[in-house]
Length: 235
Length: 112
Image: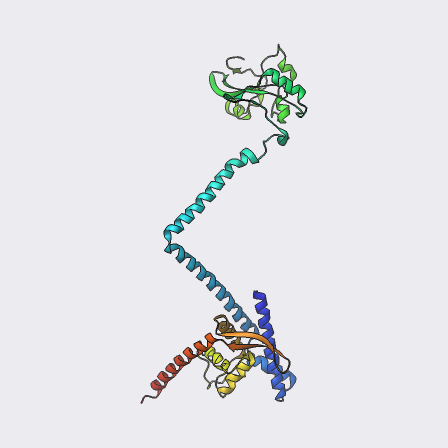
């Protein structure tokens, strides 16, 4: 738009100078003299173009400022309405942001495991008692007969008391079946996870500590492997 | 055209009035307006032709004049300006203001 107007102004000035020179030649002036005279009478061409451009810019700024003033005055005139509108917007934006902040990690971001999109949890629900523990026989049957599942594992939450030395601490424990870590695609930073041997009848109890507990209680001590701790007073 | 010290320069705001007044006789292009002002004032009013254009744009934006590209009898494309009804009203207003000023100045310089 600005370029169009500028180009049009340049064309107009050119036609002006040509006409002026032509008339001077008709009055007997030599060709180059006529051209120079026309330019002299016109003055500085680029200054004229600049002045005109500045005029457009000033005009535009004035218009925008005018609109802003007008809008502001309108809002001030109906202050109550303006406040309600602003508050509504603020609440709406705030609400949507909070909602997204909550939904994003729970529903949208994948779990931090390998193959997170192929991970499913199966549990049983009772119409009155809610979520139920899966019976061992059911699990065994799912593990063998449901071919849609590549690998299966099971876990059971419980509240445990963890003791090392003389300081007991309430933690959340989880009994897990073999292949639990394999299914999740999670690998320990230190030591090993459970193997088939750990599930033998004569195997000693083994635990995998969470990273957080390891740092809190053992100061991230790497020599922890093989040490004996006590969970629910059982070594 | 070297500026003559004995000729008056253009007073602030007079150029708009001169343009509107010139266009009262019919549509004209910038060059024609410049020539008309010079001729009518017996070359007393020296208008630098270029200074017409910012003034023309200003008048056009305020709605006092309109413009159209037209081809002259000699086959040259020129932008022609014409007075709008609003410009006519503005001209009457400016003219009476100018007459008042001129009368006042005359009384000041040649008291009765």
